[in-house]
Every structure is written in C-alpha cells, then in structure tokens.
Amino acid sequence: MYQAFDLSGRAAVVTGGNGGIGYGMARALLAAGARVAIWGSDPDKTEQARVRLAAEGGAVEAIVCDIGEEKQVDAAFAESVHRLGRVDACFANAGVIGRPSPLVQMDYAEFRRVMRVNVDGVFFTFRAAARHMIDRGEGGSLVATASTAAVEGAARNSHYGASKGAVASLVRALAVELARYRIRVNSLLPGWIESDMTAGALGDEKFTAAVLPRIPARRWGSADDFGGIAVYLMSDASSYMTGEQVLIDGGYTKF
Image (cartoon, one colour):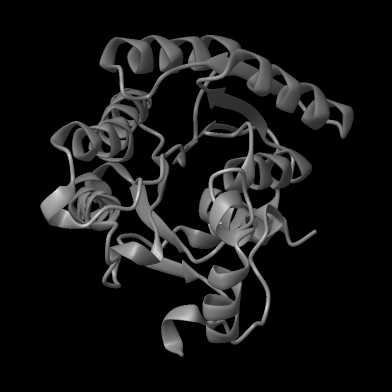
C-alpha cells in the first residue's frame, strides 16, 4: 500500500453511511485501516449496514441520527468521539432528493424539507466536527457530498440545486476559515449514481434513454466509485488540497 493512504489509527464519521455513496466511502475507509462511525436516520437500515461492513473486517459503529436536528447531531458526534476515541475526518454525505416541481407550483414546505437536510444538516455536522478538530489541535478533513446540480441548471429541481450549490459555497468559505487549524474542507459533486435515492429516475426507460447517452462513460456511477476519493481526502496524500470541488460523474458535465 502507498504509505500515505494507510489510515490505521485514524477515525471517521460518515453521515448517510448506511447506503449508496456513503456506504461505498465507509467500506473503503475501513479497508484502508480507519475506524468508522456510520450515521443514518433509519435504525434497521443503519444496523444492517454495520453488520455487512463488519463482516468484511474493520471497526465500524452505527449511530442513529436525523442530521436536520441540531441537538441530535451534537449528541451523535459526541457519541462518535466516545466510541472511536477521536475523529480525524467527517464526511457530510447524508441528503435527500427534491420532489420535481416547477418553481411556480413548488410548496414552501417541500423547499424547506430539502434545505433542512441538505444545508442545515451539513452545517450542523461540520460545526460539530470543526469544534472537535480545533480542540484536538491536530487538524483534520471535512468532506461534503454536493452534486452536479450545484453547477448545472436543475430544471424542476431548483430546491435541490440550490441546496447543493449552498453546500459547495459553504465548503469554499470553510476551507479558507479553517486552514489555520490545518483542517481541509472539500466537496464531491456526484453525477448519476445508482442508489435508493435515484432508483426511481434510473429505473425509468424514458429517463435512461435521454440521460445515459449523455454520459461519456456510458454507465451509471456506483457506490464503489467513491471509495478511492474518500481514502485520498482523509489521508496525508491530500494534505495540500482544500476548497476544491471534485466532480465524479463519468464525464456527464463535460459532454
């Protein structure tokens, strides 16, 4: 193993680590030697994910948390530190997809539902992680999962696009603010990835016929496509990288 990618002795929190991209991240981090706490709002799904990950080896904890609730996030982070001993990296990955709607017909409650998780949740999570990392004085890595919707026009999904654009902007601001504490902050912009969240769209023949030909890689992304970047961003190999947006979309935004 390239020595810089060895995560032995380090620990990470992955929100939404019970499925999809978060699960792929957690799986790779464990394989690289890290201890990991996965967070999820569904107790059964989160525990089942923990069991599957533990079966592959490594130290993994499962914590139930609704990241849209400030007190739950603070409590979950404190519990993560208690179980892991420390947190060197925090992946704010959990999110919700918007229900497609034209702006003029969109209900404010739906707009707030998306913002509550995708923006407030990242804010609460990163704030808790930054406080811990600053107090420890050893630096760390914060990684947010945004979306290609942050840089493209998400028609009929303006609430989702706005939430992910906010996350990307938050990351840039925090990268500058937290650099003095040796805390790196970066964002990931996934394209169309196979997951429970995207199952409806990717299972629609009309959607597939319109979108798949626009992806140069000619396939949907998978959870495992995010393992390598997770290890890299937690490792010493990325010690000089901060404030960046990493597109992982099979070339979708380039075509």
